[in-house]
Image (cartoon, rainbow, N blue to C red; front, side):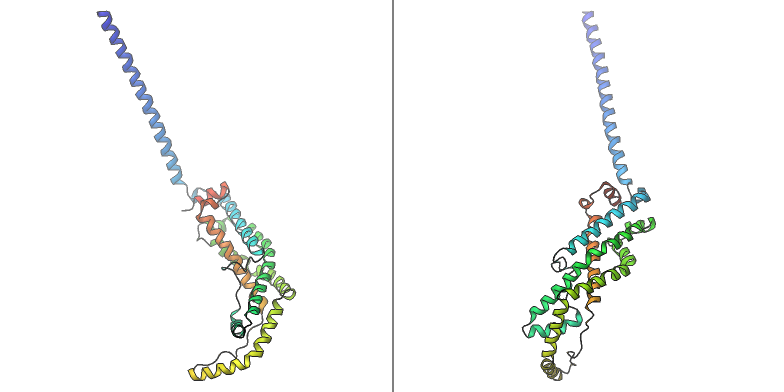
Length: 272
């Protein structure tokens, strides 16, 4: 009987010790997982632009800008890249709106449409020549510039480009536009438009004058349109390129999926 009680007591002690050890092990395991989770959360919450090195900032921004420039140039230099994109399509110059209106009234709207198409095709041909200018500006970017851009608004990089590349872009693009307009039908359609306009201008001016007299308003149909198409197309081409770069920049800033490299993920992911 005593032997049996002793055996039960020993078994009880063993079970108690085992349970205590198991509890201690379980507690240790739980504490380890909690601490690990806490550390991960702490690391994530502490990730900010201040934890990113200057080299990483500059490198990430260069990657992002190169992606934006290549996207803009490839999109706009393809066939109908400008014409089929309502956000960058080059419209009829405001100085020629009266001409376009007259031609459409006389059933010659197709001439206007062809003229607009040829202006946009001229922009397409000039766009590829801009990439070297943008790449040069990216290489010359300082750490200070990179930090300012990263912590700036969604179009900060695009604004930087406008400040540092506009003059060079204009000088590079205008000769190409000029060559393109002389070789394509831009000049042809412009001349056709102006010839038709002059043909119908007098009777329409007379009609407009009568209407103006009756309404008491001064007629504006006698204003002569500007013929500096090359400057107009050049400015619109640059504006279109900047717009496309801005869209890609915004995408990288706001959409994690657009950050296709680990460096982009780290740097742009740290922005609050």
